[in-house]
Image (spheres, rainbow, N blue to C red):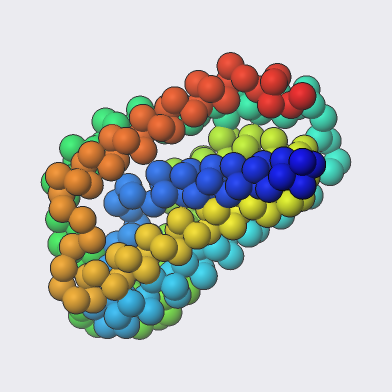
Length: 235
């Protein structure tokens, strides 16, 4: 029974990490454009390469959050973080819903080309050079993550709150959450690179719009649940 309870808890953590990861991944942004641009030259392998760079940046955030937690972590601190993080999740969710129409009508191929990711010589600009597939897709994953304000804001607020809640449960809960999150990131980026390397779209614009609405709604709902139930979660 005890073992079964642990398995159920870890499964919940894995699903939570996956759902949070896919909710953020479906929004078109610099990392998606970098993957699309690189896929025209490197095929499906662009996805895993960009993911490695992205995961390295996230790993740095995980270490900083958890190392810092060991020095000041207490249930009252996590409770405050849960409220702040939950509020930020609500805000992020509402922004996703607002941006759903824009995301569904965006021509991601043109957007990728506008970043000089799919063709042309390497620009002398630092940002463009770093994003160009010929300069390395791993570095593209690092830069498009580290310089993305949404990504940084997420891990400094809501992401930190979730990770610290998992930390209170145990290191296996943290590991399950991270694994689920990375499965979502890797799976989506591979789907994007595989699809665009064949000259097709991952999903239709109509389906994309619905998916963004769904993920935005989930994010806002989970943020509210996080704030309301943070004391129960801590117990």
